Length: 147
Image 1 (cartoon, helix red, strand yellow):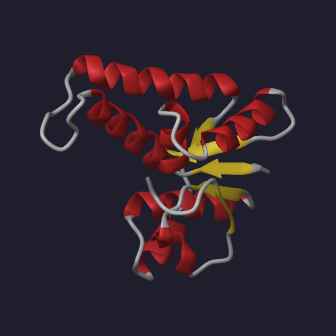
Image 2 (cartoon, rainbow, N blue to C red):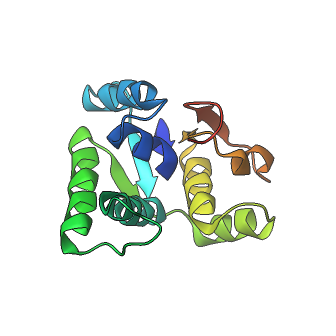
């Protein structure tokens, strides 16, 4: 059993010291101390690396990231792995059912499906997409609203 599955937004908050970062730090520390377990989906890992790479450009809406920026994203993913976070693939049929219900991105569908399959709490930011999930997943929001 996995205790926590992380969506991308809380991990960005952690790496960029946004509101809610201390909440994520507490969970990562618990995982590092073997008091809890944590995972993220391969889709979340992908999203985390490319979003960090884009943020590292300084102008994410207009400048494409290069190798150096992607290296930062991959380094940050290795930091999470160092805490004991695993990267897992949820059952595709669970992802399809969650995504098929509408109102949620494919990446978020992967995170929710992994939490469902792992019987874990899904750690989210202030993303309203998770409010109407068609499945019963325990949610923990690190903040109210997006940054």
